[in-house]
Length: 94
Image (cartoon, rainbow, N blue to C red; front, side):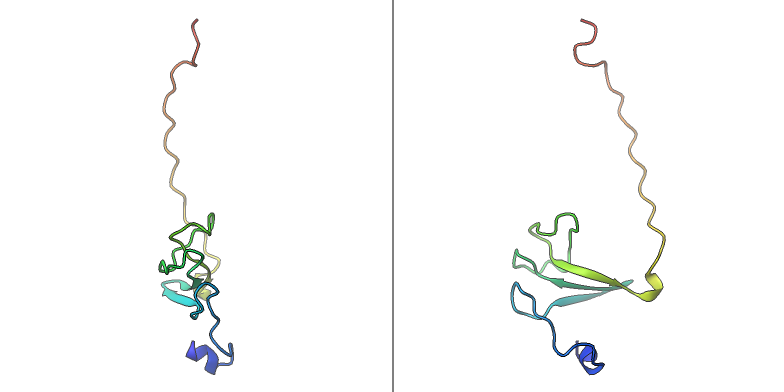
């Protein structure tokens, strides 16, 4: 945060609305994550659930990608499991 202040990007660290402490951040292999502890009041290490952001055990935040890691093709999804064979419909053959 000191480097951001010296560079003139921020005047002071932004506070987490849930505990008043500075927002947390993590350096990752491909960028940074800025996060708040969220409504459960616990620092879960930046674990986020974008589909269910208020789930206990998760934090609230956003991700900033390194320039070289932006606009990458999506990671191939895993193949869907083969459907199980179904027996005859219920009531069939009566």
